[in-house]
Amino acid sequence: MFGRSPHLSQLESQKQLLLAESEINRTLLAGDMAELSTDICTIASRVKSLGTIASSATVLVAGLAACRRTKTENTNMKPSWVQTILQGAGLISTLWLAFRPQKSNLKDP
Image (cartoon, rainbow, N blue to C red; front, side, top):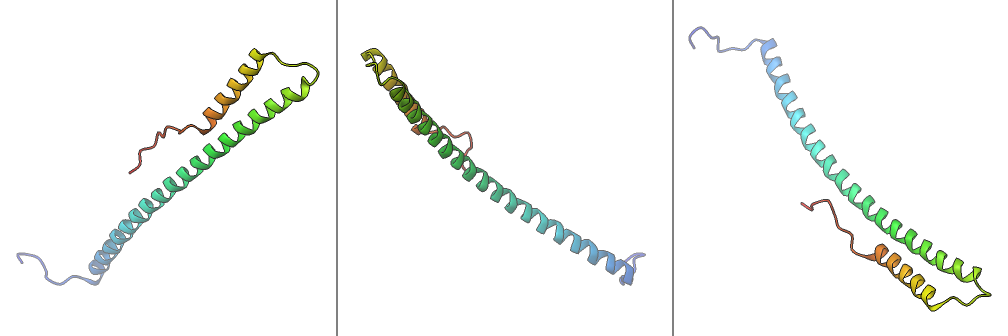
């Protein structure tokens, strides 16, 4: 109390209230941003999963369409056994690439 007045002026008290309110708003904003970040990560992982499923379905449909197209084009000629094995191996590899477990680059918290 050496040289200090124990009473605050009205202007100083308003300034302190505004500073306190600003600090509260800053804290609330930080919490909202953290929640928004978590929601965005959740949505991104769901979109990635949906993209993986769509990609697998596209590869499957393309593989089946390719097999069907080769059968309809060569109806007059009987394919050799080597060609049949190669087509089967191609279809199996396409299906394997479509349905194998995907490695995830994201680390789960």
